[in-house]
Amino acid sequence: MTTLDCDILHPTIAQENQCCKKKTLVPNPRSEFLSLRCASCMQLTTAFSHSNIPISCAECNAPLAFPTGGRIRLVEGVESRPKVNA
Image (cartoon, rainbow, N blue to C red; front, side, top):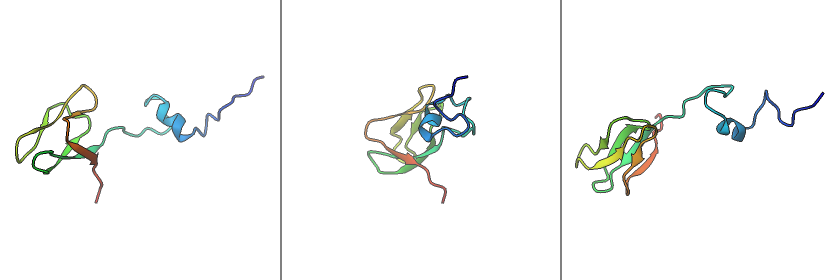
């Protein structure tokens, strides 16, 4: 009988992140809402990280992000951070 080198019931966080999202022990979403700051007018815009439509600034109508089929691709100069629940 052989022994396993890793603990299957208690994987490390690094092992969970490398694993396919369908094979994790506790499923959790990899998408989130983002706060995007426009480079020209500094206006904050809330967007979904896996949006399928182009995102533009509400004030100056400048493009902020484009869909890629997965996560959005930010335009150069746009700052993003995860939206906090407050």
